[in-house]
Amino acid sequence: MGANSRVSPGAPQTLMNPSNLSTSKVHRMTLRQKQEEKPKLDLKETIDGLCGPENGDTICGDWPGGSCCSAYGFCGSTSSHCGPGCQSGECESGNLFEILSPNTHAPDTIHGAFKVVGQSGVPAMSAALLANGRVVFIDKVENYTQLILDNGQYAYSSEYDPSTNMVAPLRYETNAFCSGGAFLEDGRLISIGGNSPLPMDPTVGDGFRALRYLTRPLDTNSWDGKSWDEPGNKLSTNRWYASAQILRDGAVFVVSGSLNGLNPSVIANNNPTYELLNKDGISFGHSVLFPILEENQPYYMYPFLHLLKDGTVFVFVARSAEIFDAHGQKTVKKLPDLPGDYRSYPNTGGSVLLPLRAANGWDDEIIICGGGAFVGIASPTDPSCGRIKPLSKDPQWELELMPDGRVMVEGMILPDGKLIWLNGCNRGAQGFGIAKDPSLDAWIYDPEAPLGRRWSIGGKTEIARMYHSVALVLLDGTVMIAGSNPVEQPILVPNPDVAEQAFATEFRVEIYTPHYLLDGRDKFRPYDVELPNKHLLVDSEPFMVGFKLHTEPNDLRVVLYHGGFVTHSLHMGHRMLYLDYVGYQPQSKSQTILVTMPPDNNIAPPGPYVVYVVADGVPSIGVFVMVEAKR
Image (cartoon, rainbow, N blue to C red; front, side, top):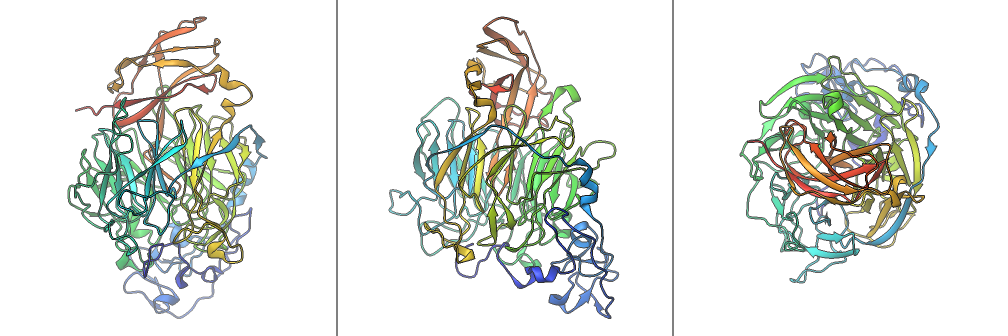
């Protein structure tokens, strides 16, 4: 990770060695066989909540937080403590595959194509689609990128134009290494937190508390190529690996982070808190202890966050989930643990809020897939997924299998309502040089298909996308893929004989063309999409959409799409809505319809979105709009 003494939580450390997990036998498909019974030892009880051989050979005993000693030496009662790798206490046993086996089905094949189209300019650690149709890439301070700033230093951020495949350098003033991010209600992109300065570039300062802003307004090119703005606003505490979610009123919920970038198994290094930014992206100045993070250390960074229809937030970390009221500062409901391996950083899988629709009352359903067993290159990866409706009367996880185990996998919604899963690998974890066996297939998931028949293989790339990769949907409905920089500083030629250098820094940008634009289907795109008003109000307000059709579709949908901020397999704030409409005229080439917005900003929080018209699964070219906050 950073230079000198700073290390990634994904870096190999004594406490995180797979030899410490010998009590948990791993199998490629069975996930976790029944744990062996551990011998009872005469050990002393903890006095500080730490346990195991690295903490004085202590056990948890009657520790108030729970009797299980986790693989990483923390006492607790969640499945992160009592599940695979549990060292002592009331450890769980069981075979997840026995639960999943009735749902297995060989995946189908669906068309999809990868093509290299350009160069990213900087290693693409983070990314977002901007309102000008371009993509911003964000990286950490490096000793090499492809772009030079006017001051002679390397650029660590870039703006990529998919229409020309040209890239421009952007400057920032503080190290954005492993930052979080969100779009503010006025459309600006905010980059949150980061890491320390490095001597290789004295022009870039400390980013731990930094807030960076990028402005790209609707319907103007006058801001294209302009660099990040850093007026000096600060977080209340240091945050490296923080997640963010915009709320109904435009406030930004910022969660977790490391205080210093050092070993997360040492509590003093961690920041298991949250804070709120106002609608302008300025901190209210208070960090509040967040128990779900505290209880799941060291798996507490980059939690999954999803805004729910009642204004609360779904929070997931490690294997644990809850519903949280960010403004009320309270846990509303604890949810069942998700069976299987660790799902969040540094064994990150993917988490997606499934498409929302008025027909079912905008019910929220979330899917989490993939993950891994421990931090190390030998870690197996989890091939299971869980789906849950957190606001239902009795929320439970519905389990199913992916085509294979995968970690660092990116899940996102396509405009046709299916999900695509890209990037990552079959073995290892997030961190420098601790992953192998790249996963090259694109997987397509149909959330409306019957359980056990939802997966298809949708094409294969030749480029490994390992740690620090990104993927996102563009205005034309294709998917941009970039990044892979699993080394502390860039290398251009891989060395397969050295694990830490087995994968080089990747600058190639790919475009993935999904099934709905292949085999001649692109000729059936709706076209000439026009929105007289691009500033949309909630409260079920209507807005007009005009467009043209090549043929009469059997199914026509209008989609409101927010891609969010993409980093480390998280798509922060990502959501898609199906909107109701009236006024469609059968057998007419030219259409003008009235589309109904959702009732409030819990369902569509304020900020930039893309409107797609989708005919029989084929999307139009998207049009950017702004969803306004209800005051």
